[in-house]
Image (tube, rainbow, N blue to C red; front, side, top):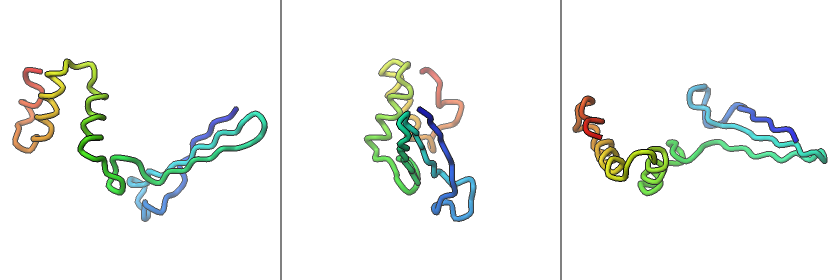
Length: 93
């Protein structure tokens, strides 16, 4: 089996390389068949935003090593980051 990940040009990029999120995954099986999956955008991008529930789920999964109380407090602070000073973001967690 051979796996190849390509990042071809994307119609979403409109000539901007920094916005081009398109990729193509090709898996060539031993019997010679090739499976291809192409994505132009992903959940959490401007063109495919996350719901607030998915955002919270992803956050919880990524900070799973923290205690539940610390996770909740950090999420609350991040959701209100405009009102916080940077020095207070992680204080006491």
